[in-house]
Length: 481
Image 1 (cartoon, rainbow, N blue to C red):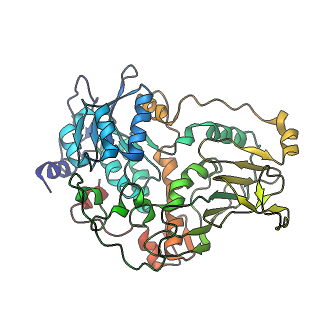
Image 2 (tube, one colour):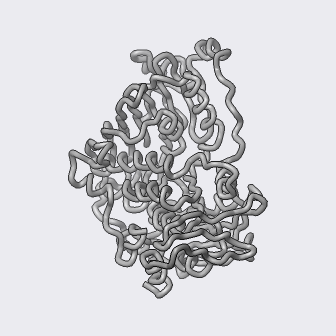
Image 3 (cartoon, rainbow, N blue to C red):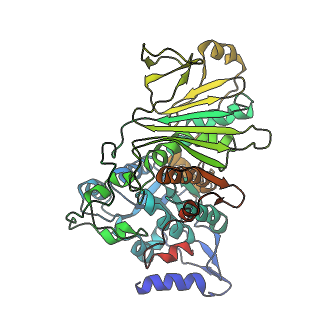
C-alpha cells in the first residue's frame, strides 16, 4: 500500500481535532465537513447556481454512455475521468470530448490526488467493482451515482445501505427508469388503491444472453490470453480473487460469470421489479426457490432460470410471490386478455392462460380485483383485459409528470433541489433480493432466509456467500470504512 493510502486509513482512525474542514477550491468541490473520527457531518455542498463537478469511474461502454447522458443535462462538469484502460477504443472518444479533465487509471490515486476537484462520483464499472469505489466516495463526502445492480454480494449492499446514514450524501442507483413514468404511475396507483392486494407478480426477460451456448460441463475458468498493453489488470480485478487476464472477462463479458457479474437477474431485474418492490414494501424474501435451472454451472449463469421469490404479509398487504423467468425456451404463461401476442395455435389456453412464443421484457401484476401488465424501465402499466381497462378509466388518479430524468434527479439532489428516486436505502434492499436469487442459481438450491437476522437458515455455504470470498490482500480496507 502506498503512503497516500496509508494516510487515508490513518485519517479515518486518528483524531484530527474537534472538526476538520477541508479547504475549498473556487472552481471545484465545496468540501465535506468531518468530525474528529473522520465521519461526515455534512456532505460536499453544491450551490444551486453551480454545476456539479463530477468524477467518472468507467468511461467506456456503459460507463461512457452514462457520462454522455450526465453531460447532456447541462448540470455537471466532467472534471476527472478514471478507467483501467485509457487506451482502449471504447474510452478514447470520451477522453477526446473532455480534454481538460484529469485522467487516472486507478480510482484510489484519483481520490488521493484530485479529491478536491469533484463533488460527486459516477461508478460505471463492472458489477463486482461497484462497491469499493462507492464506499470510498461516500466516506470522502462525495455524492455517488452507481450503476445497477448496486453490488455483487448481499453484505456489500448492506454496508452501502448503512453508510447512507453515516455519511449523509446523495446516492442513486442507475436503474434509470425509476425516474420515469412507471415510477410516478405505480406510486399514484398504489396510493389511490388501484394497485392493491397483490399476491403474485410475473417478471420476465427472455432474450438470448452472452453465455448461452457455452459448455455447461466447464469446470475451470478459461486459460489466460494476452493482456493489452494499455490495461491495468490488477486494478481491474479490485477486490476479487486473482484471475489471469481473459478476453471473456472484459467489455461486458464479465456479466456472464458469478465472480464478476449478476447475470440476467441483476441486469434486468432492477428495470422490471423495482417499482413493485418499493411501493408494495416487499423488503427481503423469506424464501427463494429455484423452480427451474437449465444448464447449471458453478462458474457462469444458467441457460434458463425460473426463481420464485416469496415475501410475507406486510402490514395490510397479503403475502406475495414474484416469479422471475429468464433465458431461452422459458417464457411464462400470460392471462387471457393480455393483448396482442404470438402464440402457438397448437397449444390451447389452460386455466385461462396463454403460452406465448415471444414476449418482451416486463411484468404481470395480479391483484385481488385487477391485473396489470407492463414492460421494463420507465414504461407504464396497463390494466388487462381491455374491457376492464375501459371500466376503470374514469376512476384512475392523475399521475404527475416526472420533473427530472434519472441523471438530472441525481445532479439536483447534489445541489439540494430534489431527493433521489433510487437512493441506496431503496436500491440496496432490491439489490439484496437479486443477491439471494443469484445464490439460488449458483447453488441450485432453495434459499430459506430470516428477514430479521438477515441470515440464510438452511445452508451454511449460502450463508457464507452472503459475504462472499475474502477480498484480495490490500483491499480489506474498503470493508472497514
